Amino acid sequence: MAEKKIGVLVSGGGTNLQALIDAEKRGELGGGKITLVIASKPRVYALERAANNGIEGKVLARKEYGSIADYSKALADTLEAAGIDLVVLAGFLTIFDEQVYERFPNRILNVHPALIPSFCGKGFYGLHVHEAALQKGVKVSGATVHIVTPECDAGPIVLQKAVEVKEDDTPETLQKRIMEEAEWKILPEAVKLFCEDKMTVKDNKVYIK
Image 1 (spheres, helix red, strand yellow):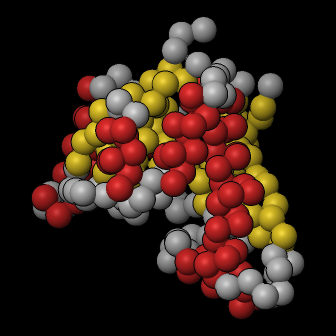
Image 2: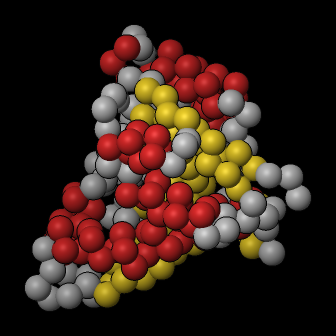
């Protein structure tokens, strides 16, 4: 099976990027190799993580482009020029348009810190997700890896993992538990499934071989 090149898009500290790097070192990405990290702003810690592991890092700063369309074209061009097979959003908070989806159909994965379709869609990112979950009083939350489509958080679901919500949880403690118990486990797992050609998408559903 040919090695697949993975491009990871980041906007911050890159904890999910680190989980992927660690999984690759353990041989758990199904032959996938992280070859490019793109940050939406300069000097984020995720770029240091890339550099420390010998991975090429690039900054494509949103504010340097006049429109979402211009930014999206630059992003798609950069990924394509690097020969990227799979794009992973790891805390990437910048919007891009259909140019990226069209050039990487069913080849973009995102991890969301809730069990979709709960607490997802526009405005549900970062701590906002966990605040909403706690306000609702849910007993379980978790994380979802899904294929990215033009509609926010609505793409086909690849993997989900539930995490217990405790009565004394704060948004911060819940965020940390979901990262450690769910996100850092199912994101590398989904990448492995892709790299081993074990995922097919049909009628907006993912089937795993």
